[in-house]
Length: 92
Image 1 (cartoon, helix red, strand yellow):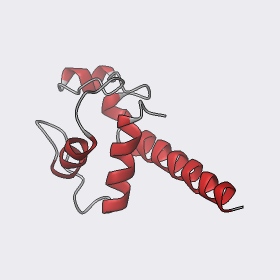
Image 2 (cartoon, rainbow, N blue to C red):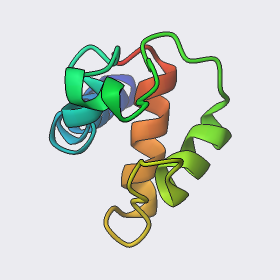
Image 3 (cartoon, rainbow, N blue to C red):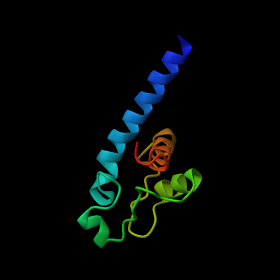
Image 4 (cartoon, helix red, strand yellow):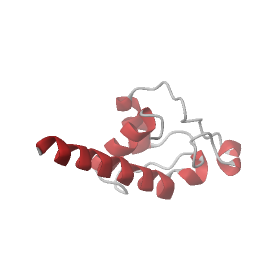
């Protein structure tokens, strides 16, 4: 029973991260993570096969990079961590 509950929480977290990515990131990074036309013009990176660590992704999401908006104070620490994990998992 605990395993079923844990898998439901994990699935819900992935769904939440996907919704958060669609709302906050896809405008520049594209729904597939490869970059939208506008995002590519601003230098958005292809996230579909990123090689940065989850910790580095947390840092970039938190502080921003280049023209990327910093999300510190706009997203909770848990939301930032879930986005980083989502990106590292190949947007799945």
